[in-house]
Image (tube, rainbow, N blue to C red):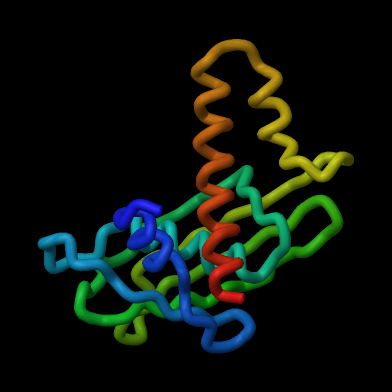
Length: 151
């Protein structure tokens, strides 16, 4: 595994504090603030720890405040809904007792257990849509790898 990929997986691998609470560390990228993509990725990781087969088909996120690069980020996951074919998670990232980010993410499965939007997307013609499906598959694989490493 390439060092940069190993570093990314380590960053996405969160410490479980309780069933719905996780802690993530920040990566210094030469800024006083936390990189927003890191917070979003860690929030998705936190959500994925609370549901099986978490392949996101809908995501809404809001960056509320600048994150402090020197402080850990706490993620609280609200298990809003768990059904056979649909799950919804709300995640709030907190630093210094204040929310810096919140996200709502949902996953839905069709009858065969595949994410319904991926099935639709991959059935569409054209290389661009297949590339998007491939990228989504890689992200899901990264999150699964993080989950497997955590045990």
